Image 1 (tube, one colour):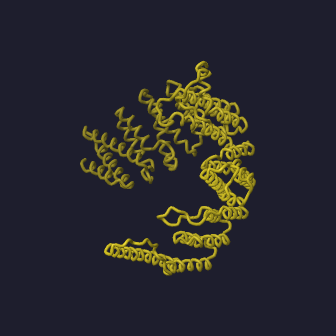
Image 2 (cartoon, helix red, strand yellow):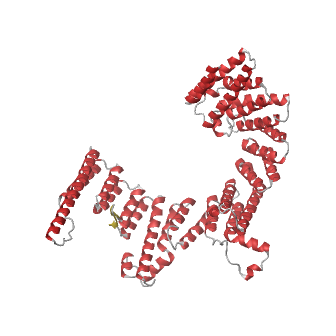
Image 3 (cartoon, helix red, strand yellow):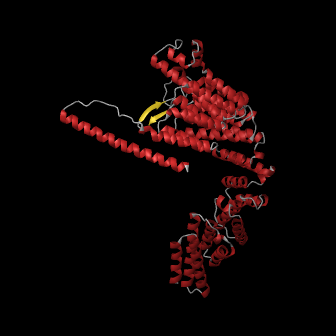
Length: 613
């Protein structure tokens, strides 16, 4: 087995290096002691190297070569050989290893990048030394990446790394010029040689216009022409280097020209505009002309420098690309920006400038909602309608939010079957109307429109159930009691048949049952409490579910203890045999439930209650 053999040889080499260090250390100590006795100044000598220092390493290289001949298509052997060459400082072998690997795996972009990186950057000579060995050849690195791109023209990684390589080299030449303090138009001979003896005009053009990176970017966009994110990655690379504003501007211009109907391109332009605007500091000095400005104009001017260009871009975007995705991305961008302004550097007291910026952004959000409503955007995207309603409620336009929700549920079929829109409409109705009955009417109507198999149907049932329980605390009605009992039966059936929806909803069977039980307890209705516990424990299959959450376990514990406490009270006040049987049944059901869910300590506590009674 080659892998085992190579591992054994590596361990042998490590042992040899360790023993050699001990021998050298012992020899140095003996020489130091001898020099102290003879009072001679020790001579500084480099540690000698013998044939044995390289024999095992060469033998391991030979083993890797034979393994690669046997399994030519196995890339792992080439990678392991390259890693070993780096560890053993066999830098001359790396170029051969990468060349052989690329012959068999020319479609692997990582290999081309690794080989080019070795040619230009070299590698660290050893762990204790930060110096670099090998590398420095920009010509070889360019040739490798160009060959890789010729074979893999659609490789995004190769295009990006080729672009980044030229930025590295451009920065290297800039640094060299600054160190040598040379004029831009008079490059040193070393610079000319490294740039393949180009003339002064080409070198100057290279520095001032970043010619090579721009050429690479243009060729990359020709090969991969319909990917916005790919072009944005070039901007991310540019931001890692100084003095790349011209390249970034050119990239943004190409995005603006080629992706007029792509949502991501518009958002990228807005972010770019916002990030590149000069921030107005909070405590800047006002000029005499500024002090003569009217308060309204000054308020507007302070808010404009950072965001108006970005908001204008989004305004144009929603006019040009009138799609739900464009509106959703625009709203998300503005909300994120408002959040940054509200919590910038952890400040609690916002400055007047910050407040003005937040006000302008909030006004823009309201205008976006009006535009979406005018263009009927929300008819095909119910989630967007809910988000717009949240914006209007947050900005104080609750009546407008309710109007949007009513239009969505009454006029649009897609929105009419969406439970989130009905829940939001019921929530806004409860905000406006002083009576909870209005919200209940909305929820009753929603149960007729939303299909039973929809995951949000359980949420609608649960919300209506809780509202009716809240109404029952102030109004006693036999009709309402029957409705509550009927909805509770539907909840048990719906939740148990749709086990997955029980995880996605905010409501759980134990929490809803506990709320119902508390209502019965407040009325001292022992019969109703027994009906609730019987339906939960016997009529439903909730106790047979697995992976029950901690909050559900806690609610079940409280609910069962509540039922047991009332049965004990009834038993102490001359309760019948039925009360004792009910108490025993509750304790046994609790024991089985908590044992099944790996809570033996809770289960034992219920059995202790049974034994005492």
